[in-house]
Length: 423
Image (cartoon, rainbow, N blue to C red; front, side):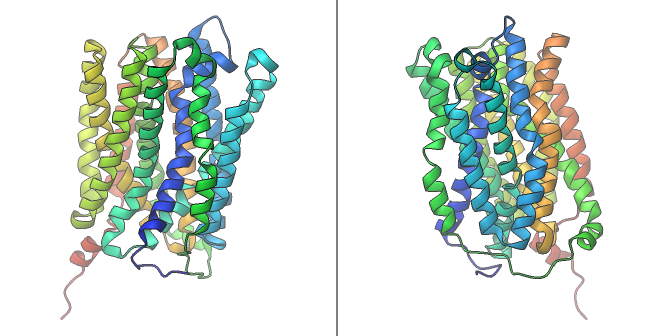
């Protein structure tokens, strides 16, 4: 067992980051290929109906996230961060293989969407319990002065998954015909994630344990930290909606703006690059300037930029604008969300850190993330206004800005500076 505050071995950090990225790769791939999945499992005369059914199934995977957050998160507080992370990855692997191998509606009828939904529920359970143990590990292993940077890698790893998924999608679009992509090409992207499952299990088995084994009084501890939990839920709700609205740019560009698939997948790569660079940058700065300044500035800039950026995109409908907008919005969001997830985990006591963090994150995503893309498509279709996603995202960012303002500072450097001098 390693003690909190020791410098983590690079391979240990890589194991957590890579494993987390692999899990989110498959979950995000579903979103990127939602149109093709809708045609495969939910054939309908109206393309919008098929897409909405596909996105509703995507949302079904969020229904089990709170349950996974409670079960696997508490497991991380009782038995250790390592077994919780290992179990979540095993379950995610089962879901990956299931989605990859499920036959189409044309082949087995109604059993196809039933199986798809079942595997989505398994994936949701696994991901619900993933964030708490991994974030706890990433802030417990390094020294306090580097918690911001290492903690932000949890968020950055998700964008690594986005980058890889976007790269795979771009490659498939370039190599396959539209008919091949719709028939079997999208399954290749899922299989690419499933093929790495053995590697993920191997690297997570080598992790050290960072839980110190202290006894817990979870009910009392949670009551004492109710304000952190409430404002944390608000922060995660706003960041989650913004995340999935930005991630839906791939579908938005094709279905609403009628842009070429090549540009939409290039935008996915830009989203990945923005997140991979934005999250560590925000974490690095937060170690020196504090968590709240980084979150307030990045969230504020994102709030005032969202509507103008979407307006330019909807009017110009140029591929280069889509790519630049995707990178810019994601860079700011990653700075905010990466530091935000780590800050909440840092504010929570170690004896309830994994369970409380997983539950907060899973609840926010289950309620707001699972419905975000569905609401965006529905609002755009009903209002006939391509600006609908921007309005929804701006409202969510306003909520998260309020929550950030109310949260306490948790950066060690700021806490030391705020202490009164000794006589």
